Amino acid sequence: MSMAASSIFAFDALIANDDRRYNNPNVLVRGDDIFVIDHEAAFAFLYLVSTGEAPWELRRRSSLRDHVFYHPLRNRTDATDVHLFIARLAQLGDAELEEIIQQVPDEWSHSKLGRISDHLQSVRDHAAEFQLQVLGALV
Image 1 (cartoon, rainbow, N blue to C red):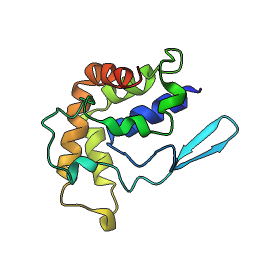
Image 2: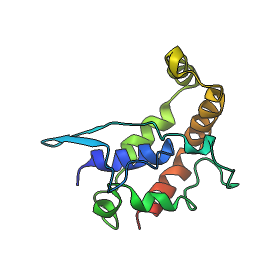
Image 3: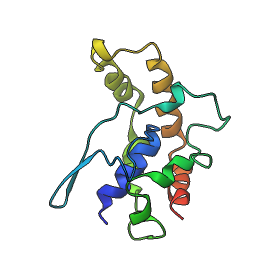
Image 4: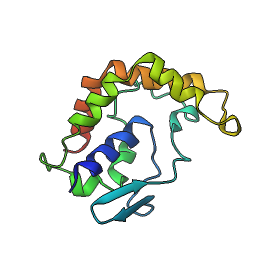
């Protein structure tokens, strides 16, 4: 299993995308390349009653067990190296994050973009804990 699959698993955990499931993969594969599509269910926390968990905690995210890459990655320490993804997340600066939020097209603008930004900043600020949570979700 490629490092890309591990990164996609971590990315979906980051953006709370519960829609990339084994029965609805939302990925395109060409050779060794994997392309993710369809993010309309991302940031599900915007619509749910709070679980009381911090944004980087995944213990209650049982939906991760349905992720398209959960079973191929499960218990495979060689396949769960999400270090590069987490390193990039940890390096994401406030200005870069703000620029990303500003690039959201007006037709996608959402009154809760601030909550999304806060979520991403919080996970970034706890990247090491998030990495442990991602790896822990795969054992």
